[in-house]
Structures are given as structure tokens and as C-alpha cells.
Length: 337
Image (tube, rainbow, N blue to C red; front, side, top):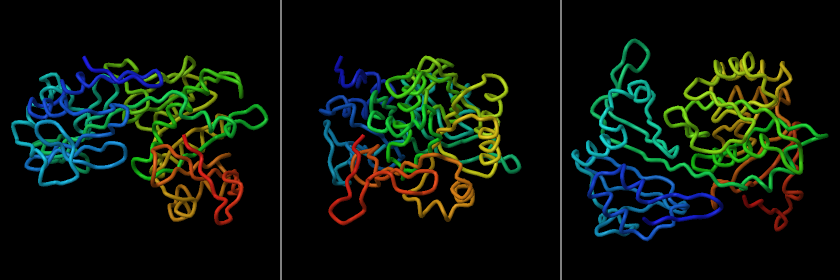
């Protein structure tokens, strides 16, 4: 069994291949890949298999290699997709109706399988998903220590700083947040361990499978899996008395109402949001309100190019630049995480 081990993580290519239809599994098995650098695999009926590897997109080809040329790629058949669905659902897709309705499944290892097809509506909500024609396998990577360069910015007078991480899609914000949670929960040189409550709406942070977290979020962390963020934050405040609450991908106004309650209760908040800059925040109602009210102590902006998780800028609650120190041409550096 081929294994890639780095930073305490062991990702098995064989276990990933077990989720895929036989033709795709054989090709992937023959590829010489560093599994740490494999980010996602997209399967679409009648289209080439797309693989995101080291931040670049390739097609998967016979007998087992990656190519930048779409014409070289193996094209997915309906049978391939059906076989893959059977494997990821344990031959019981109907048992995952609630997850399918939300558009994804989480499998052992914390990997998330995104789904697309024909949506069956019931009023203004999706009742089910039929004729599934696309799958997006997003691999979960827990990189212990990836938040190390940020930790000195995460405390102020001994208290954890409420922090919002801004990142474009694929920028590594979830991976970074995951390690921040672990380190704040366990404690270290910058502060004692804190009780952390995590609302893991899409099962991406803890990667829970059958209720068991697949990722290490720290020994003082309580996880509410599969719950919407507004209800989840309120439930944790009432039931678990967290010192810090962590959520991934803030979105609508209801999130904002829950955030106000979190801060009113004296709890600190760690969160992420899609965004490429502080300027972009000003054009989104919820984010503009949070910025205007100085809700967060830190704003961490990730780079839109380069390595996932690369920090471009850090701002304080007033929007003043903390990192890099100078914005002069030639003096602007980046923090590599």
C-alpha cells in the first residue's frame, strides 16, 4: 500500500482509489503523486477527469498520468459515475438523503464529495437531487503547524483575538482555520488552552464521519456537526459555555445576528469568508457592518495566487495594516503558511 507521510499526516492513495470507479482508480493508482498536494478530483459525465494538483489543473489520462491537454483526458461515462456514487455511499445513497439535499457527502477521512444534478424542489427548498451528473471530490488535508506563523498575532494581552480570515476559493482558509482551532484549544507558548465550540455546517473542519471527527481540532473542542451556523452558534452558547466559537464561511444576515450574540456573551469568534481584499468587504452588507463596528480584532487576508494558506496581509480592528509592515514597492513581503 502506497503511503505519503508528511507533518504527521498519512494519506493513503489506496483508500482514495476505493471511492472511484475502476477505470479512474487504475489510472490514479498508476500516477506518481504526492498525496499531500492533491486537492480535488472532478468527475463529469462525458467530460475529462479534472485533477487539481499543486494548485494547477490537469486531466487524468491513460495509463496513469496527468496532462494539461484536455484532449488527452479520460472521459467519464454514466457507468463510471454510478459506480463511484455506489462506493462513496456504501451502496445506500438513499440513506444519505439529508446530505444529498445539501449537495454533498462526507466520507471517511473527512473528504467531501460535492454533488450536482437535477434538483427536485418542494416550495422554496430542495427536496432531493436526482440524475446526478457531476462529482467533486475535495480532499481534506490537516496540516499540523500550518498556523504557526500566525499564532503570535492571535493573542492580545493574553486573550484570543477574534479573527476573520478572507480568502478566494481554494486559498486554504479552511485548512488554516482548522489548525488555529487545534492550537488555541490545546494551548501553547502564546496562551493557555481554551474551550472552543465549532459549528461544522458542511463537515469540513472536523471531517466527522458517522459522528466521529476525522481531524484533530484539539482536546478542548466541542463539535456541532451538520448544523446551520446561526442555530449552531446559539446552541453552543447555551449548552457548552465556549470561550471561543469557530465557523467556516460566513454568509447571510442570520449569521450576523448570531455573531452579535456571540460577542454580547463575551465569546471570541474565529471565522472565514470568501473575499480577496479588505476593500471587497466594504461592498458586502454583513462584512461592511462587521468592519464598521470593529467586530473582529484581526483580519487575515490570504493570497489569491501561490501556495494555499499564504498570508498576504493582516489588519487590526481599526483596519490598520499590521503585516507586512511596509507597503512601499519592493518592501512588501508575504507570510508563508
